[in-house]
Amino acid sequence: MTAPTEEELPEPTSEAAAAPPAKIYRAESDPIVVIGEKFIVPYPLELNIQHTVFTVAENYFDITDDGGNPVFKVRDKLFSFPNRRVLFDADGNPLVSLRKKILTVHRRWKVFRGESEKASEFLFSVKKSSLVLRKTNTKTATSLDVFLGSNTTESQPDFRIKENWGGSTCTVFHGDAIIAEMHRNHNLKSLVTNADNYGITAYPNVDYAFIVALLVILDDIKRNGDS
Image 1 (tube, helix red, strand yellow):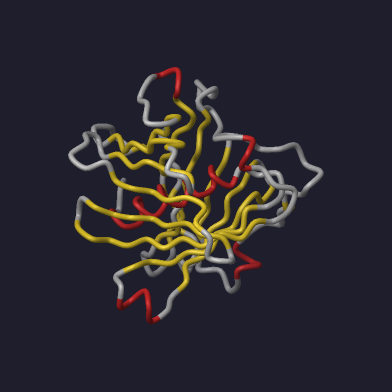
Image 2 (cartoon, one colour):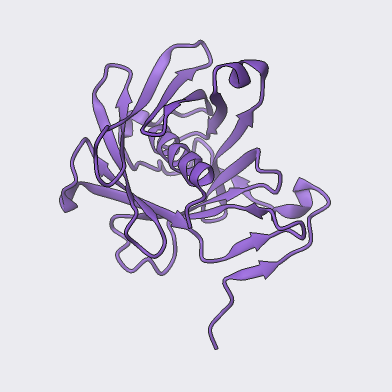
């Protein structure tokens, strides 16, 4: 018998009830490096992301630190197929390319180093989990699986992204450890400028460029309802 891909669950009474206990990734933990060692720091790092939608084909992400200093930016590559975005550092150097593969059963994002699409530069991929947790009012909490390029069997994801039931926050896990948390900021400025604003906390010894790339992918999946 085929295992079900959906599970009906009652709406939890609180965030504490919704999530099992988890440990926070700490400075003494082994570094998690996916994009680069230079994006590892021994303390929690707070970043702010503004996503502005100009047209269907043009979306900008600007990432700053708490002081408003540029850290990264993400730009669409126009007229590219499949859809592609590039994460740049503050100096404009391309770090990774994020490519959405649309001709697959479960649409998947694949991430390559720099602006390459060579197999040798493949870093990781992201897709929706096979299990969709559904609330009684039919709203869903998105869960994503992240597979490193070295994980060729994909029997288990290397990381998981789990959205909370309200849809305003999500958590990134490595095993049972929390390595980052993200939340959406709602304010008047975002309504006026047609922009979404996010806050990220990347925990110590976690590649924060990797976390930013994950948020960009999550935003697209949520915005476009990819299956």
